[in-house]
Length: 231
Ligand SMILES: *Cc1c(COP(=O)(O)O)cnc(C)c1O
Image (cartoon, rainbow, N blue to C red; front, side):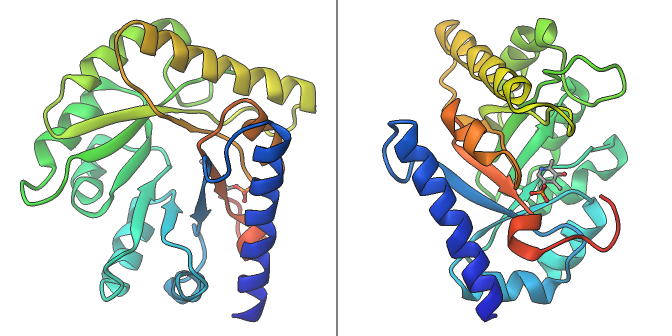
């Protein structure tokens, strides 16, 4: 508990200094605690330390942990992993946010399956800023059409964009990718959308992402330590 409390404070301090170095107002970037591969008990401890927003990559983990922690009514679950169409119902029922939307078909299913009693699902479109064929994410050229279609779905609220640049990039390259995502968001806003979210930056590069306008950083390792199996 003491350790998690300290690591969370250290990450929050990194976020604060990066915002200040970027000349941005304090509080303009939220911390998403990426709890994938860690047990529900780790989420409970992190919640006790003050954290409310948690990110999961696997539908099965989201399902199990949100059920086990249903007594914590102010938890906010963000789904950030690849999403297949046969798994959308669980996400539509359990998540508050989805960051990894990259196809209209998935968006339509999520909108149709979002329970009427819940707020609209908050979504970000994942953009493949690196342009690698193997990576998930919408191609930048297809983004305007996808964004317009997603924004029109009744039970989703399109909030912004997300990216995961190549892990082994140099800082200058990473920063260029983050800047590219920001320009995509700005262009969509000029086209008439009202997107307030850039989900970018992780444990090792959150400062660069904040310099380029990140409003949510997704942090796992720096909070919870090394994951026991690769995710
Ligand atoms: C695992 C993961 C993170 C967290 O990465 P760390 O380097 O552990 O901070 C962030 N975003 C996504 C999409 C992830 O899969």
